[in-house]
Amino acid sequence: MSAIKNEAKTIFNSKRQLHRFLFWLSIVVLPLIQFCVFYVYVNFNMIVMSFQHFEAKTDALGYVVNFAGLENFKAAWQFLGANLYMIKNSLIYFVFCTLLTMAFSLCFSFYIYKQFFASKFFKVMLFMPQIVSSVVFALLFKYIVTDVYIGIVGGENVIGLLDNPATRFGTVLFYNVWMGFGVNILLFSGAMSGINESIVESAEIDGATHLREFVSITIPMIFPTIKSLLVLGIVGVFTNQMNLFTLFDNQAGDVSTLGYSIYLQSVRADIINKDPNNLDFSQLSALGIILTLILVPITTGIKKLLDKYGASV
Image (cartoon, rainbow, N blue to C red; front, top):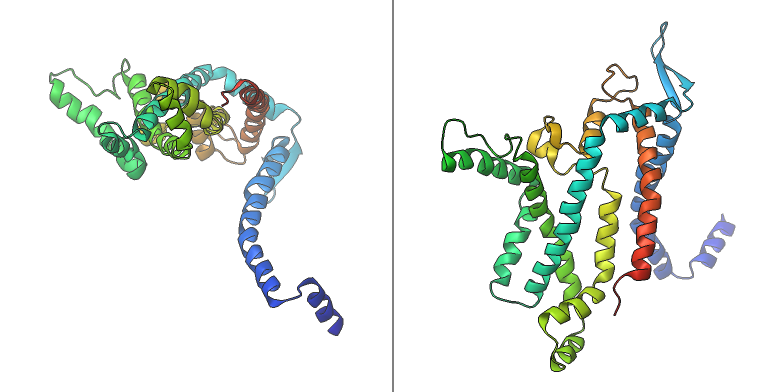
């Protein structure tokens, strides 16, 4: 017992060091457990399940686990082939809701950063979707584009923008672009506020216009933030369901994205596939691995290109 105490005294020469260690441990333990459970275990289990096939026991409760080979990957690939329009929708949403939103967010953030006319008003209005609950905001938006729209336009055959096949896709695009402004503007505005004022003042003395300041100073100075958001957008291109479940429940139809479909498949899935139109857990695991193998090299390559050719001061 005395040997253990002496060893403890050697490691922690004072109570202050012991308290510091316990404080550090209290901060690290929970995130470490979360990482091990929700990242390491989940991904390891996904890889294992992608090669498994489950069958119900006939003489007792439980399942028989068999090696499935590449059958789950084949089913997942067939699912992708049968839903190419969802991949196309996901890519279109990415262009508009990530790239276009980022471009507009940069402009509005610069407008707010320079404190131009009504900048505070625009800051509140553009960040409003993030303040209000997404479900509440979706209900308000649906009310505006259906009941309010029908009331304004009038007529017997008028239907809401989300119900009209000709306007449904554009309405969803507009909603997601608007919803994407808040976080982007918050991050870009925060990054712009960290720009050294002496650099801006020096440029103004040299006669630089606001456009020149935006292109030659602001963009290069906050490019790490732009790069991070762009990489995150690429990573989530096939998993982002673009608020479709909030707007349509499970009836999105031809505006569905791959992320939305995967979410619905996950809700309906079981350990044994009882519906040929749905994927089971093992097939969903294989689908996750396929998407990972597609996105990892693309994301890595784009990140390296941005690091090499991106804007710099």
